[in-house]
Amino acid sequence: AVELTPEPEGGEVLTAVKTMDGSKMKNMGAADGVKSDEGTVYKFWLSAVAQGALVKDLNTEVLKDAKKKANFPGFRKGQVPPYAMPQIRGFAVQEGIVQTVQSAIDAYGLKTISGKDGEMEVLEDVAEIAKGYKVGDDIQFTATFQAIFDPEVVSAAESDAIDVEAEST
Image 1 (cartoon, rainbow, N blue to C red):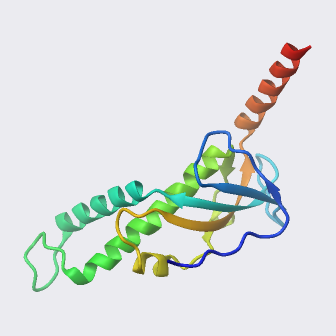
Image 2 (image 1 turned 90 degrees about the horizontal axis):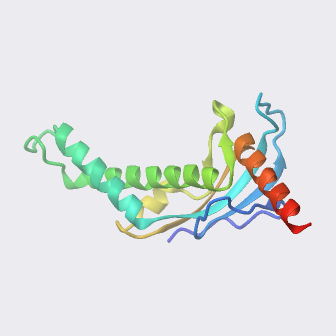
């Protein structure tokens, strides 16, 4: 098990718009020198769990693709040698983390920004996680990225708050 990077001090803990078990998102403030036409860009910190079932499915999918395209010297066509298995597992782990971050961005009413500024950084060593990973286990990780609040989600939340206010008077 890889030790998680500790939660940063400060920041505002966000409430999920959609349920996402085992996750915690913090707004760490406006990102310096990053602009978007759609609104203010903020830095976010995320702690989440990539579900073991998702990673297992991805591993199976990658393995199937590798078997279709496999042409390793000394092995029959369609045979994946044992030395290639850690790379396949590593790719499945990495993809599982990426998909989990994308789900979290959606669950917290955020929107990614394009280009280099929109890249996410996993704070743990993904290669180390993959090395000790058993297919089917959940993966706890932390990541940082820059994003904006999705204007559609924010306006929907505001109109819901207005509806609640109107009902209570």
